[in-house]
Image 1 (cartoon, rainbow, N blue to C red):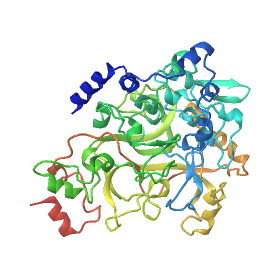
Image 2 (image 1 turned 90 degrees about the horizontal axis):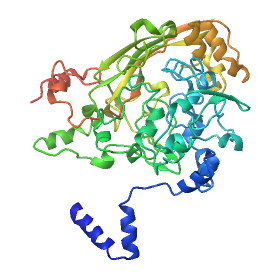
Image 3 (image 1 turned 45 degrees about the vertical axis):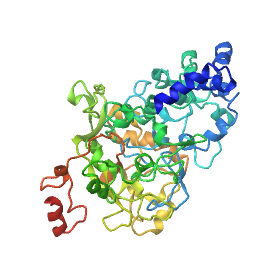
Image 4 (image 1 turned 30 degrees about the vertical axis):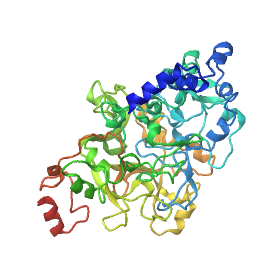
Length: 497
């Protein structure tokens, strides 16, 4: 059929008609129509782009990539429709917040150890955007269109701090070479510039979207094939376990969008398709993850303990920074942890939790078993102040479960990794909060966050799923008892007919 269609298009192209010319054009590689103007006039950042794309900045300012927040729903402990995201929540893996850690660097440059949050923001701002505050024209003009839309992009220009009249901020590649490599939709490499989590495959999910790691990447599928976009808003999906902002919360990002509800073929298709009623596709088809499973911010250690490679990176060979301090951590590679998840639809109260805690179980209507990255965290807390005293958190005071929860502190990662002095890092990190009316007591403690956090795993998909014996045996990868099955059911599942 494809061959016949190509022959038809080639035949028509010789006819000389307008349709023939258009058909020939469709077979040609897309080239940005504005390249001639850029060659003649140069590239002046977002202002060059808005000459033709006049609505783009207005669209971008209402996206998660700019605001770093979105109205949340079904997040335990947070009022529905309030604005939450990386702009005003603690990132456990980074051990801090964006206000405390926006331009944290190592010798003026980015490193995994410092992890300055502003590095990956779509604009070159000296401080994070504030929820509910409209950006100024000057702030919007810092939008880096090329970090998403340029095929060629020099990351070293972005990862270096710039000091100018607007303050201190991360740089951008505005070179002619980058501007002349604009693509119609972002390439996978462009998305991974930020979403690879500081270039560390094992830093968060341990499942990078690369051809050697994921069957969909190997087949040439783009990130936006599944994460569809609407006016610069990008769908994240409904099954995320960690509390993050979502531009298009009602747009599903699921395997069934392409593969249907009965994806299996062959002699075992019936049995395998029956599994999909209670088991997510990812559970069988993502069989390896790597990453941090334990992290203690109260015990800084030298990064050069493992020699050539970073203490924060065990499997992807990130260079160490001898003499700098990082939190004590444990990194593992192996099978995921398996938990029950349910889609975060408007009426699903057991779908999403604050700080990625497990909320669904075997009895939750519509729940399926999903793979996840389990994480135990020892974070930094105030010995005297409570969490409800933080800006925007007063609603926690009236909940008996949270009224006595201590205030979570935000260290500055630059000070932390340079000195290993936890108090000095907290002093520096909490300065932005003093302007908001919150001054920490000066006494800190390291405390394990109650419960285990679970980070969603959706990439690293393999064509061949787990074998039957991988789960259905006494030494299988899945703990059926922990998942809520009865003793009789566990015995049947471990010894299937």
